[in-house]
Each structure stands twice: as structure tokens, then as C-alpha cells.
Image: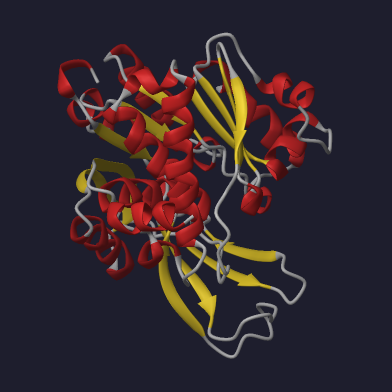
Length: 323
């Protein structure tokens, strides 16, 4: 990137997921839970770092044991935590997550309000954000004030400093007051992003159409975008750039837990883009970057937990070579 910058700064929530010790049960039926660090923006930052890239995280944690543990996990994984602040009056967010027998994920969140929702614009590490080659964020930080205003201000700072803006809405319907408000607020910042990634579920939620055909996807395209991606799980990914579009198949693996696979995909793609921004205009280079990202997501799905299963570059290249 400009001036040799390769830093990916990720903004938003980091929390503790509590996952049942037994698979295929409801939260009420679970005999016990294991704690696992989570939060999509934090997962993306760690994914970038695990692949040998430069990453930083900006967000707020509770000044409690869990909050300090999460900050240590960022540092232990090579992520700059200079943008992390602590709130003495609010707890670190918790989420109870289970994969039911029917394959659907069930969430129960404890955040009313949690520390991540209370980040203010005045608490932003402006100098860190200004150093970003890519500034990445989700939509959970748009739900409530004051975090929403901090999110919008951080986007402004990053854009003014020349960063690419990367947006993965990461829809969690249970956290929004209504489906309508979720759709409105997620789309309220749509025009400002350079890179947007949605899942097929999010595509249907935002367009109201259960289809991944090009004409449906193009309802989400904006002339200001450089890249729009639709991830299709184990079917790979469709991509749309200004002058070309296409699809890249995924890798066949034995899936164990898909938690964090989308974040791994995003982290890997951003890592490749900051290494060579020309890939946004070069179809062959872009397809290679997406192939790398697909492999990274596939590997993450073969192990339990998001952060422990994020791969190194060597592991990704080995899977690509075997395919």
C-alpha cells in the first residue's frame, strides 16, 4: 500500500463465547460450557497476524478478568492492542453459542450494555487508525450509542488517511431491536465501503430475495465499491469487481465447526490485498487471493473454536498444493 503500509486495523467487538461441551444440544440441555474468545473483528485481526501480517484491534473491553484475558490473547497472537480501552463500569460481553442437532446455531447474548457498546469517539486511538492500509469493521458496533458514533468517526479518520474500508456486516439478528432496523442500519454505511463481504444468508436478508444470481447480488453493488464478495460456505465464493466478476470454488474438507471460517476468509483476503493492492484490478491476481482465502476458511472449519483453528500461511499453502 501507499508508503509500504500493510497494517490491517479491525474495529468492533471482542467477547467470550461459551460453547457446550456436548455437540447437538440446545443451550438449556448443555451439561457444561467451555469459554472461547470470539468476536468477528478480533478474529479477523488474529487471522491476519497468524498469516504473518500486521494487525491491530480497536475496541472496548470490561476492566474485568475476561477483558484482561482477551487483551492478552490479542497480544499473544501478535495483534497490536494499542486501540483497546477498558471500562470500569461495564462487563466484557458474553455469548452462549450452540450448534443444535438440526445444524442451526443458537445464540444468547449478555450485553446490556457490555463494554464494547460504550466506546466513545474521544477514546479512539486516532494515530493507530491513521496508519491503517485497511480499516475493517462489522455492523454490531452500529447497534447502540455511543459506539455507533465512535464507529462512524473511526471510518472517517481511516478514509481521510487513505485506508481502504472493509465491511463484513456479520448479521446477528438476536442483537437488533428488529429486522427492519438491522437492515436499515447495516445499509446506512453501505456506500462508504471499498470492500464488502456478505454470506448468502445476509444477501437474502438485505435484498429480500432467496437467490445468489448475479442480478440479485448487483442490488448490493455500489459504483464506489472496489470489490463485493458473496461467500457460499463449502461452495466457495462469488466476486464482483468494477471490470470483471466470477466465482472461485472452495476446498473439500471434513467440517467440524464453521465458527470463524468467514472471519478467516476475510483476514486472509485482506492480508493478500495489502500485500498487493493491484489485485483489486487484476482478475488473475484477485482469483489467486480468493483461492488463498477460501483455503484459509476451509482449514478453520476443520477444527473446533475460531481462534485456535486459524491457520498459518504454511498450512494454507499446503492445502492449496494438495488440491
